[in-house]
Length: 118
Image 1: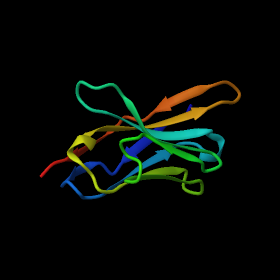
Image 2: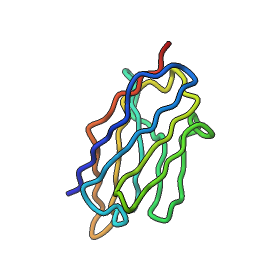
Image 3: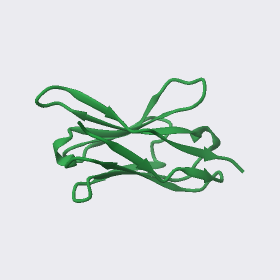
């Protein structure tokens, strides 16, 4: 069982920056994929960014060039650096972890609110 705890959300003005953190209860080198998803009211949950064990990352089209995902295996933490924030980035952001062995298992954090507003 993997527990994920997000932090770093809050209120920020358009054009500002935030950094989200996701602390895992296990050594993250054992987790194949870790990522961030978001869900705004009335919308489906969507991928923001994900990173594999080897460090390869992929991003949702709406955040490419503005957001950066990284992982610190020593701290068992994944980060999401969000720059040039827009009002449409407002959502609850969820940390996600996927293990493939010994069987596929997926875990979610409780979510952290990000609000971009002037």
